[in-house]
Amino acid sequence: MPESDQSIGRKILGFFIKEEDSDTTATGKPATSPAAGGSPAPAVPRPPASATTPNPAPATTATGAVDPKFAQHFADVLAQNNPPGPDYFEFRETLRSLSNLGLPEEKQYQAAWASFKALAGTADMSMLTNTANQYIAALSKDRDAFGKSVEAAIAERVGGLQNEQKRLQTENEALAKQLLAIQQQIDANNNRLTSIGGDITEQSARITQNQQNYDVTFAHFIEQIKGDIAKITQYLK
Image 1 (cartoon, rainbow, N blue to C red):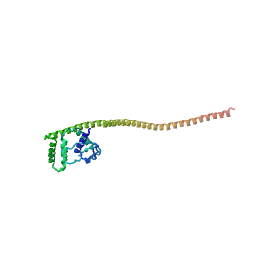
Image 2: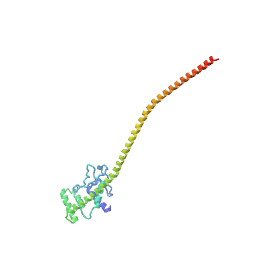
Image 3: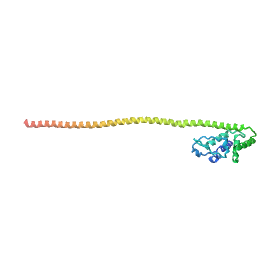
Image 4: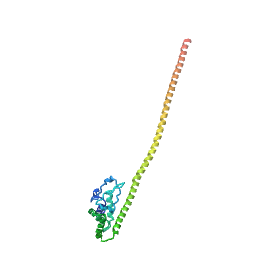
C-alpha cells in the first residue's frame, strides 16, 4: 500500500492494540501473540468505549486471542478505506489522548466531541457514526473474504488429507483380505504337510516291507533252485 496508508494503518493499529503487547513497529512486522500460542485467530477491534483506558490489553476468547498479525491487517484495511478529512478515527485519537486526564467517561466523550467539532468544522454527529459504520462494513467485507479463503484452504488441505485417509483405509482393507487369504493358504498347506508326513511314513513302511518280502522270496527261490542243483548232481550220475 502507499506510504501514507501505512502511516495511517500504524496510527489506527495503536487505537486497538496495546503497544507493549505487540512487536509491531514502523516496519509493520507483527509478533506472535503469546496468549495465542502462535496459532492465528481472527481479531475483532474493541468498541469505542474501550478508549477510556490508555492502552487496552488484547482481549482473549475461548478459542483464541487478538493476534498482532491480523490486527495489523485490519489496520491496513481501515487505512485503505479512510476517507479524506476528519472522521471517526480522528475523534477516537482525540478521545484516547484524553484518557490519561482522569475525566469521567462522559466528560471524555464530550471533550473529544468539542475538539472534533472545531477540527471538522461541523456539529453533525452523524459524521462519526456514519464513518464508523463504513469501517465496520469494510472489516465485515474483509471477514467474508477471509471466510471464503478458509473454506478453500479446508477444501484443499483437509479435503486432500481426507481423500488420502480413505485411500489408505481402502488399501489396508484390501491388504487385510490378502493377509487373510494368505493365512488360510498357509493353514491349508500346513494341514497338507501333516497329512503328507503320515503318508510318507506309511508309504516308506510299505515299501520297506515289500523289499523285505522280495528279498525273503528271492532267497527262497534261490535256495530251492540250488537245492535242486545239488540233488541233480547227487542223484543223476
